[in-house]
Image (cartoon, rainbow over all chains, first blue to last red; front, top):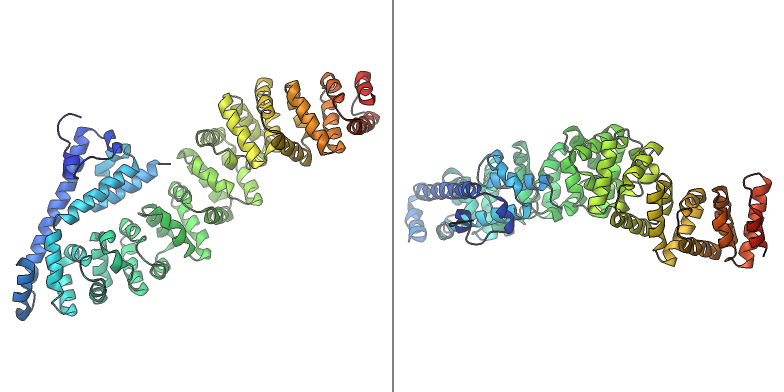
Length: 70
Length: 467
């Protein structure tokens, strides 16, 4: 295969030989699906973490913010 | 052996991880399942490790909050995704205490998002009643992939409790996508025996024989035999649907393993099925035996096949090359299935008979001796005599010598059968090689056979025996 392999780059290095059966377009599709899922989850996690502070009792909010966000 | 089904299972699990439709990844059917699994595990690591530091701090923050408050915030604000990520970073006891404050519906949502590898300590100690409550919700939602991922991490009491709430027809779909198939055997041992039959009947009804056959290959011999017995107990209609599924889905390697576990009565029922006697099924069976060297599994079935089916088998065997025939003979020797071989060989053309006879000649004395004893027990001398006509003289001499060393009766029965097959010229040569006791016994046997009009030995044979 010519050029960088987006799937190998995303997954941190050499892939098992079984993946050779995929065309460059298919590897690109799979890489995009994995990256898309990761990015979506990351956004959801950040939003949930930020929102959670507002729901804590006032007395605890400051202490927890310090631990979580420094 | 990797099958399209194993690939399908891996694609289902990957699609679930990425929250996508499995049909989006049809092209992955070209990839080996072990490679797909590695991609999935690396994708899981990527998704979980990217936010690891933030998750660790959230876990630390939650630890200074009372458990009831943390559980409430977890459900109302964190949501299942964040809870799933944090769960593995909490001390196991605290995570379990928090889980005890949450309802099964929410815990089921968390389970879907959880990587069990990262929360193994928590999952391993989940109380059985709570595991069952969550399993019930997941089962209602058909979340088979999620359940399949957890099986390897739950302890036996929790699995036992889950099995109670999962209906028969949903057990197979879960097992099919089980992450760790080596757990299939211990898990099935926890399933009450009276549910084996209904599970198999449900699989047959839902057209899930390919999945069932695929799973049977992961079972121990003991449980495989139990599964086979329960399949046989379902009756001819269910067994017939198994044969059709195995033929259509190229699953005979698995089906042969199942059939080899059947007891004698069930094997007879199986071999007598109309579906198995169809040329397409027989050809598929032989192809499976040939490709995967499953002669040991197939040989016990052959004697039970009706004569027409045996002739079909013989016609196909006639097309085998020498290497394939050698494999067959080696398996015959291992399984002591000589009478079966001799019976099938009797249906073959003289050239193939000759090739088989030569291969038989290549086995050692001990094996050939076992073959003679087995043939004698099953009264297969006439069929052997027919094959003997194509044997090289040297093999025939060994055969006669070994038969004579077993008992005069054995050698006498061979001579009688050979005489009936018109092997006179060969017999004259062979008679002179026998010891006096064997010659006397053969002579007595031939005299008796002559008297009842069965044979007409030529004078030169009688002379050789009297010498």
